Length: 605
Image (cartoon, rainbow, N blue to C red):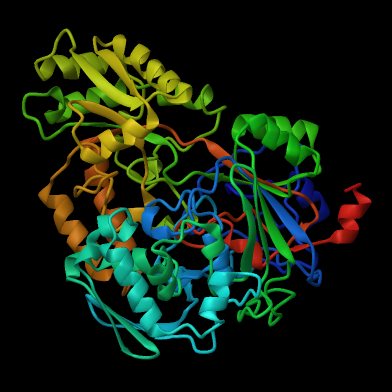
């Protein structure tokens, strides 16, 4: 990591002059993120600070298989029924979307994007996949020019693949698939504003989406979220939950799946894409012969598999486990980042006039009764983004984030532990002895432990917090129905829905935990939606200018965001710790990486 930057710690690298800490320059050797000799202070970079990118110079090697550990099973191969795409891990390698995060805008190229932790990038950081280009003639309309010469993979051993017969992808495929997502209960598009869309294919190579202007942002979500399938497969099989019916135009072909154990993918020899940047620029993709997913629910087993070289890449490693890995396996490479929305915030029913939370003084008291610095120093290991609501900082949305030090003194005071002032505010609001309230959370130890810490802090100002844990499945249904009575602990900074301001506006299933309906917010959201697809920089500015007002309202109590780590073996090349190229496209980077077999062998694997 570089000093003042989240991602690169370079005390060792600086000694080797591989990375320059504060000035520009060209690098001559391949970037390797090495284990630091000692930790440096980490500061969230401002828009003016730019990360220096080291482009690898080693020539790509074809062949090899990368092995990736998954903490949970692969639940489906049909994205229509998987709104969060949390269980369709193979689909992002076998199928493609209209657009995806641009590899050339990430660490392999210009460094404008980071692509960590599903850190969703705006349309300005996207590149065409099945869509070669697009245009927006007016707010509410987006037209895609479908890339010609892209074929569905033909696997002679697959009945479903033989049925599709390697035919070319067309605009009608795109229209039919998006229409299926729009109308299928359970799909992400069905829950969002995309249900109001009209999707057509005016000709064989043109797809057109028309949405009411107030829902236009959902077009960007859909085109960089939903994969395209041969629609005839749905007609033939009803659904694609059977892995044997997996057919797509992506860089890999699914060859085998053992539930609860593994999934095996092999290289699609007819894949169309070329490497856009770096030493392999212009080369056929993918470089790998295959990808193997190992499903390893037990954390200690996943970490052991990484240490012993049985796993090549492990994402979303906690800071606690990273500290251990640094000591036991210093040869491993890693990238440090802050999760975008994985950490929680406490929401409260501000829409009920009989509850204390309607009064801003009470909300301010809750903030001041929360010792964020102690949480950072204990639960977060001494390092965290304290201002993590309504969004966390990610590089792709840096222009929309307002750092705490740029807020007013009044807002900054809300993040300073001050129980005496909290008591005064409660008394002014009519609660001199405090009050009793109930909070709903998931019945998992880490969440209960965290809320227990909050309970203890708030008790010192007279607030009695009753914890109501619910089994995760029931919790998500409870949360989606928005029927909790008082308080709830859920996801924090929802960068995924930045321009519709999901954390503090609207009625989306997993946003706006505090049931906020505010005219100032609605005016700003209207402005963001007008520009989000046409000029995202302007939309970001509107969001940032709204933040002083939103933060002063204290509509939610954020949980400081701890650092997370993505780990990989030294022999995995052209990789920089990416997770997702765009929205929920985890592991889509696999088509760009390669394996240094000689190095792997020399390290005893």
